[in-house]
Length: 131
Image (cartoon, rainbow, N blue to C red; front, side, top):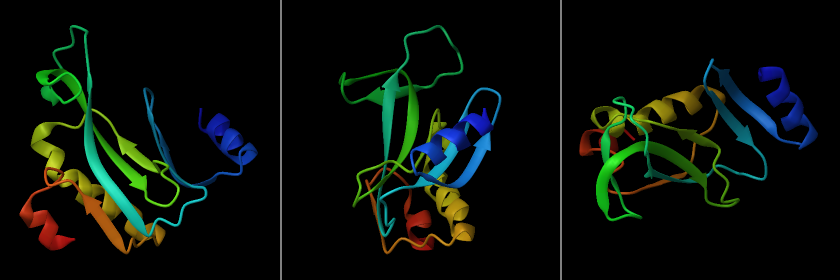
């Protein structure tokens, strides 16, 4: 799987900054037409209609109600409007720390955004102080 992803990215002239491949999913942090100086970070939810007891109840804004759904953490580059990072099925109890996990992930890669634009519910005040 990793070899296929690397080959495809190379063919599309996409630089892989970091990659982690697991059995059922992968994390890919890429750079293409992005300066990563201004990042917009937010959560979105996608409804889930199966029987899984693993899924938490989340507010699904597009449906205007609470129901089973995946809480998805998204990072969008302002300039290119591309999403260089996402993480799915975040637990609500861990959601406010997800931004810190992301910033800790990109720090060793030398990525230091000048601005991080977040929705008021992305994290708590303790994490905002750390940013």
